[in-house]
Amino acid sequence: MNGYVIALDQGTTSSRAIIFDAAGNIVSQAQYPFEQHYPKPGWVEHDPQDITGTQFHALGAAFERSGLAGADIAGIGITNQRETAIVWDRETGQPVYNAIVWQCRRTAPTVRHLVDMGMKDQILRTTGLVPDPYFSGTKIKWILDNVPGARARAEQGKLLFGTVDTWLIWNLTGAHVTDPSNASRTMLFDIDHMCWDEELCKVLDIPMSMLPQVMPNSGEFGRIRKGIPGLEQLEGIPICGAAGDQQAALLGQGCIQPGQAKNTYGTGCFTLMNVGETSPRSRNGLLTSVAWQVAGKTSYAVEGSVFNAGSSIQWLRDELELISTAHECDILAEQVADTGGVYLVSAFTGLGAPWWDPYARGAVLGVTRGTKRAHLCRAVLEGIAYQVADLLDLMESDAGYRMDVLRVDGGASVSDFLMQFQADMLQKPIDRPETVETTALGAAFLAGLAAGIWTSMDQVRDLRRTQRQFEPVMDPEQAARLITGWHRAVERARDWETK
Image 1 (cartoon, rainbow, N blue to C red):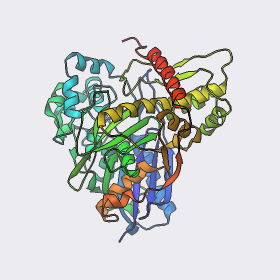
Image 2: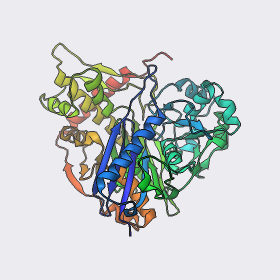
Image 3: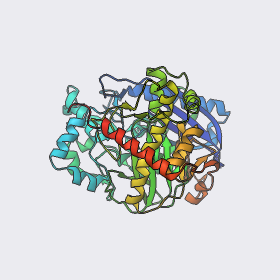
């Protein structure tokens, strides 16, 4: 039996490919960044050709570095930045506009109009989401309304929409498909009936002919077509697993039982709790999404999203130039006993759950003449932990489960300082795995289940191994005082931008 699986991990700032063996070990990998575009304040775009170019380059490089033959690869899994929207021509394959990234806030007026129409409850009831520019639906509408000729072409059936998984699969295989986890992040998908919702498409004036076919997360989506430069040895290999990045990480963390939760510390922070085959609607501004559909069984997750987490460290490095590497932020943070009363609210593109405020903006509060670079670095890291703590407190209430331990992954999870502070704010243990690339691992698991490398969810769960567990050491009353200060800071950052 072919014993290797390739995971394509298409993220917000880079594209990666990782090859895993049957034990879940990394055999080889490659990663390439691509350019971010900020045409206006609060707008974020990617060139779709940069996405495919870097992803195909990473795939070819990881395969070449592995020393494997094409016959060794059982299948390919894809995981991706989820709500980013791409519209392209059905015949030429050319995008009609740049990809509008999940962080982009340009459609805030459209969302406000939906709320004013009284659509909030219907959107929550149907999709499990709250109306917000975060999701793909209003991005599609913006492209159709603002790109000359786009709406007419869409109504003629000439344009296709896809989230990044769909865009990659279409370019690799020619199939126009997606999976339920990505579909459930569009604000157009009925998560209980597992289909596109005709009424929501009508409200947003989106022709349903643009939408991809929704297929189970584990199963064949298509096979690598001929003629892709650099991928000749992979022709005919099936793409047989796909999931949005955060749902993939939930699986990669082995959270297959209700009540198990994980947080990914990436560009943003994404906290998900498995809630099994039920799909509760949040009373606290959290989201309900499809986690995965495997072997005819659908599992759901309650989720909270922090829009800017690792990006706030990048901001210190790239815009303020206070640090030269992300690790330097850790080093400086540990040089001071506390932040000196400084709080940093990283609402650069608004606030996500539970606030859902697209008009919030970043704020630094509590600055004095004695505030130093180290205090700002520590405030950035602490701000990430505060936001995650807010999410989990509400998540336990919504889901009806008590979390025993938080499993963590993503780039910033390598920070011992941040993980310890997170344990202190939650007053619960933090479990960091040996393989922090759990997003890619989850995509590999979905593909490997379809390809027969693994035979059950229990088997893939048991492949996860703990690298370190962080126990809370801070006095609970001190932690509560810090969080109270954080909430004061958030209130000052909210509703800042003029509507």
